[in-house]
Length: 113
Ligand SMILES: [Zn+2]
Image (cartoon, rainbow, N blue to C red; front, side):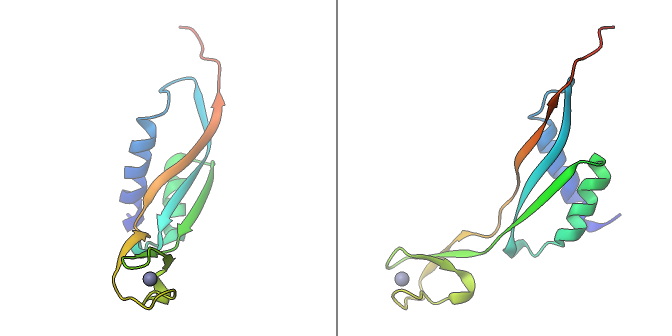
């Protein structure tokens, strides 16, 4: 089992909780992955594809962004310290996300029993 399989399973559990149990065919998902998580993005894509079958899987890597505590600017983490005012006081604004940001599919007619 790949280490990304567990992450994929967790994401899918969360998604299934939000989707109709029957009468819906999932066609694709979009997953946001924070760069700071240093995940194996391609491995995660493979795990999601294995778990969900042949749907479309889009992975967006969200770059790490810092928020300057002194001037309020948001800037990429690799430009630290603050490129606007030079301050080293910053908090993390993004880069640790891991979520399914979009899911699409089609409502399909359900057969009556
Ligand atoms: Zn600043």
